[in-house]
Image (tube, rainbow, N blue to C red; front, top):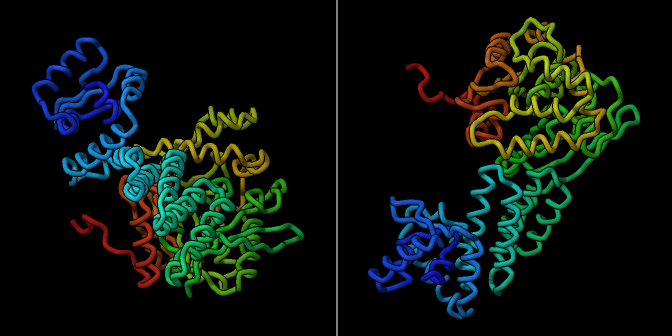
Length: 472
């Protein structure tokens, strides 16, 4: 009985075990004896009895007592049983089902369930875990002839995961591998739209790198606030690159662009973005800015209105400097943060800063990713981001913006108060406001579906769709 349980897993269901052993009375007696021997422990009564091996070594030893052929048959039986018992919620068991089908050498089903498990991990921002699951999906898909489509799906997903980790060259390599597996023109275009196509230009002798995605008639450009990295845009790229041409930018001091001079303020970054837009064709674009990237784009819309078709401002602050002199609402990071900056203790400063950027429940993995991304930046870029920036203040110029403007903000933003969004929307003529309930500073990551729906609606109509509960 211990051997049968070891096949089901370190934690196992009594209902599944019943299907592997026909004698229910004997099963119940054996389980009681195993509990008395403290080899297993009951951890759940409902919706069905659940048990766990108290020691991993116990499961491993019991598993090794089974002959290989017997193991394969039991794994297949366990998987089929789980599909029958939990058919209405298979997504909860995708990783376990994948493991059973892998050990049962049913490769197509193993690949399918590993893909589902990968998507689940990805949805919870556990990108490294997702990579491991996706590699197992690829391994399963390579075990059997006739699974080229499955291999292609896995390779594309691996490309998406590498993109989410800001590893653009490995991402492109995976996309290219997926392209090689299909001759279908529609699918090839779908994959090609995901590829990060590097381009570059120069301003004042400094190299500026940007990336093109998609082939749509309309072009979007995404601008981040220097330190967030391009990976923050990947949830949007996955949804928008099939409809639009999308440009992302390595601002100076990040990625493959030139190092950051010191000091280097918002207006200088704005001129870099101007040079990139001109290099990319010079036509007016829908300009999407996040956090301080929004301030940069407001300045761009005023200095170079011929380049800006629409403005989309997300989590935008109003006042200029990182100090405390601004009269506009903001959340103060406190004395400990300022002391860490003055002491050049970057890790401590970022550890205080990150929880104000990523604050929603269940986003701990995302916070860790962002922290690691920031730590990897050059010290000069980090210090430049937190330095006082007089050019960032848009309080006196908002009324002059002529471009149609969409202001978006999370209601639970701890980095920039929601009141800032209301002030900006009231100050820019004709601007419209959309709030993301229960979202923090990164609503395009934590609510990407809603974000893209609102963006598309604004681009079509100049308005935002009604929000649930509006007018009640």
